[in-house]
Length: 492
Image 1 (spheres, one colour):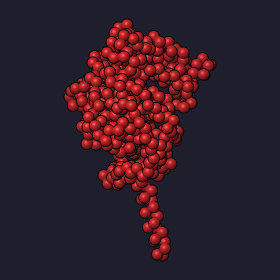
Image 2 (image 1 turned 180 degrees about the vertical axis):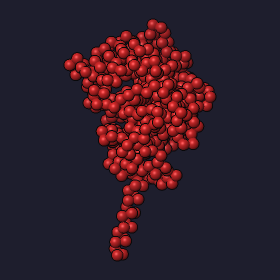
Image 3 (image 1 turned 30 degrees about the vertical axis):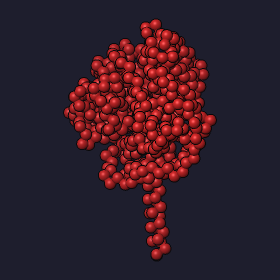
Image 4 (image 1 turned 90 degrees about the horizontal axis):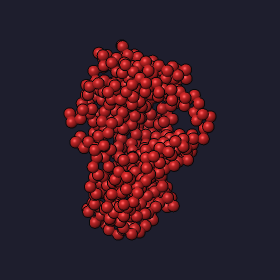
């Protein structure tokens, strides 16, 4: 009997230990580490990059490559600390200071170029390694309601400013220690068919770096076998939300998707606004509450998500279907960073708020979750004819993609500029698409360049008077060579 009790105690202890720690190791190849020169305001800096990683940093801090990792943890636990248990590095000498991180260039028609930021003297005049810890916790969020995910940044290059050196880490091993969150409550109860359960599970596996722990940490008890219907509004696997005046223009698209076996339907904004049970954004308990039309759309989608909705198409520009503003700078007065985003309608763990400064509202970083529960797109249309044109093109593509020539399916094209080029964001995205042949065009020169109306560089410095590239016509011509993906990381 004593043996059985001892075995049971050891079993509990081992289970607790397995659920309170995550061990992980990384290897970085010195052949993928590059050092080049970068000129900002006539000052020459060293720039360090690592293939397949993008660079980041707070303004004025060294601009360093970073590896982003995501781990699923039990929903009732939080991060306690990160312990780097072992690491090995090689010292690399630099010719110049590492380039300091610059302000983002605002995405605005009325933007003005930010001032050049000098290196942070406290960091650059120190002999202390930067960053002090090579593994940091960035944030915690949820995917699909109860799959808690922590995001960790790992820096393979650590800067020693006083000696102009880089410690390049070839191996890093660390342990994530967890602690119990006694206040956690699961407020979700979700209906989902078998097909979409597999769909979400596959996405979760692709997101996290510890997919083997998913069966241990995910909560299958949240799923229910039947829908809980709204008294007046239907729920669909794929819902189109649009204005009543545009509803019939989606008929051909809806019929086509139904022929493909998709449960799809249209719900109008007027139906949502007139539903007495939908008062506004009541998604987060204790949240600020947003009782405008966008808040009502979000509340409907929150209920729809719990009743099987996976995809949403917002059919119309903001005059037909409301929108939100995402304030990346956490400063409502900074209009250059107030970017329209439909993440508001996809994320049901983030606490959005309106402070009165912006007509459409904003989300501050302090309450952001940034991980979507459903997949939302918007068709920026303002007439029935535009919807019909779009529907016709969708049907042509889905019924006969590439007119029988499928070679484009393995090709992608992107252009990038400004800080996004400096951080190698397009290359980072391309690293997640190894099956594609990626074509990436960078702006010349970049970042922080100004041009006159003929394309000549007017920014003082080594490129003054030269012709910038590529031109818009060049980009359009290249897109017309047919790629499965053509995207712009930033084009000013």
